Length: 99
Image 1 (spheres, helix red, strand yellow):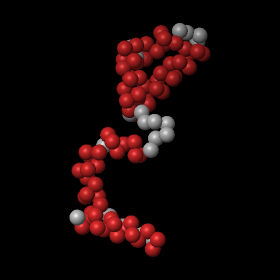
Image 2 (cartoon, helix red, strand yellow):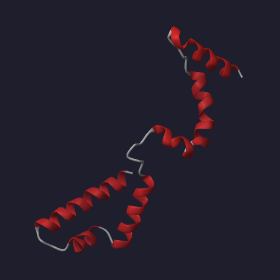
Image 3 (tube, helix red, strand yellow):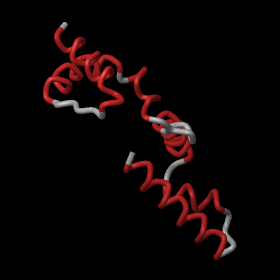
Image 4 (cartoon, helix red, strand yellow):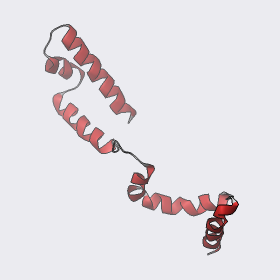
């Protein structure tokens, strides 16, 4: 991800330079990165990106196996507390924990 941010910064600076010097931006761009590498980088960035309305729940599908492996350990190490209003939720969690 950091590599993509650095590419974006380099490409942005190259475009700024091209505009300021009235040079073809594609010529400047290719001094930073060959065109085919640029196209591949854009595709990779699309794969790394999250939706604009990003929510951590978006990761559940892709990270399910990872979460399934470590969630029981995490739940065992946490001590849940609740207000009186939510005590039934806490009791349900305790029941699940005992299973």
